[in-house]
Image (spheres, rainbow, N blue to C red):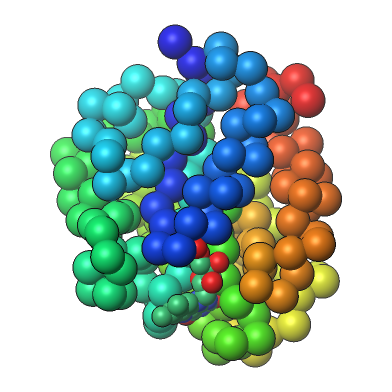
Length: 180
Ligand SMILES: Cc1cc2nc3c(=O)[nH]c(=O)nc-3n(C[C@H](O)[C@H](O)[C@H](O)COP(=O)(O)O)c2cc1C
């Protein structure tokens, strides 16, 4: 049984691609196989004390799901299934994909939806991320001058993805007891 759950939602597959990049860096005992939340059940979440959660933003603050015109259900439909779970004692880290050029006023907003949901249920957040190195006008996903998770832009800064991912994983390695 792996120690860390790795869950994502996606529309066009990029958030899955990043999940696979994360998984590739670890063995099976450390990191679970990435699971699309449209295939997950609530019990899958209760198995883990450590969770990495990935989401794209698809419209103003919108999580992927049917309201965002995704083909399949996603975070939007899955989160209500977790409504009764207590995440006290669990640690989460969030990564979010967005497009800072096309959506400069709402860059990676959906990370905040994930943040709000899990923090309200008692989870502890790690892995906040600096806003330097991006050019955008506004993001809802910023608290105390930092993104609430790793912001990735595969549409405009694909070449920075691997480097950002490695630094981010390094930054959460203490809290997640990871060896990189
Ligand atoms: C209809 C649509 C709306 C989008 N809205 C936003 C947005 O509000 N903010 C943002 O940062 N990116 C936005 N994006 C960009 C996506 O988040 C980005 O392309 C992401 O990498 C897609 O991830 P996925 O392939 O996992 O679905 C939008 C993309 C589409 C197609």
